[in-house]
Image 1 (cartoon, helix red, strand yellow):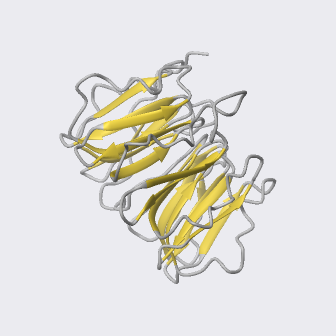
Image 2 (tube, helix red, strand yellow):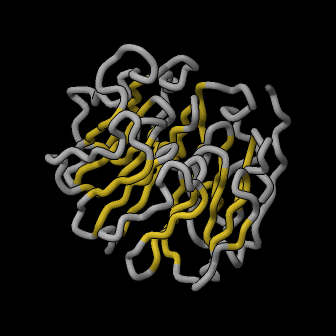
Image 3 (cartoon, helix red, strand yellow):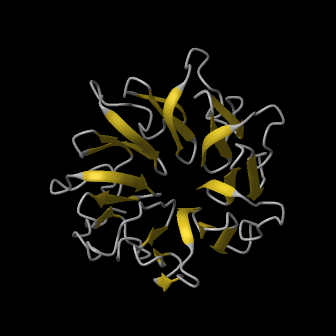
Length: 287
């Protein structure tokens, strides 16, 4: 169903200083006052507590935060096990979320994962090595090793019946990359040259990188669409546009960070304001 794009909404510039993260139908953001707020499928909630969250991420139905002491808090989804943080998960510096699973990196580069495991998405390979970034899709996980190379596991190590679309088959000549992300059933990376490489499901054109796209500083995978942030602060999206999610508003500029959800996007601008667009059926754009 086509929905009307949501107008620009903002936090006070003096308060918002921490980048945003999202996936699916909820959007969390951290304020400069140390408090974390979420809106959308989880409702608008002030989750500041001890005001000690330093990094945030999300699954489709849960929010994830790293505390200053390196432990992890997860709230929301109680059905998949994502909210049940294993006791050995400590000294964490990076977190990421799949649809219903969590990924975390310890200070030494070791990767942990927990939550739903229908297709091996939390079965971290024993030979993975040390990593610096993680991302999750519907049933697969992606990691960027310290040397920049990419590893994937879970669904899509082959191409066949749903949900196996090749999303976990890393192109053989890919080499080191500068950034990673995952959509529901596809994977995308930012190359060292500032271009984008994609693989996996292409039913909605989410792999069809626009011709000439370069100067990319970040990539993000939505449900069935993809996006890139360029050095000039503009955001380019492609793939499914059923709710206008692949058409960022013309007034969106000077972005310094962004993330894509199932059918919506969120961007952080240089002046500290947050901009959301498109599907809003569960209030995910009601900042």
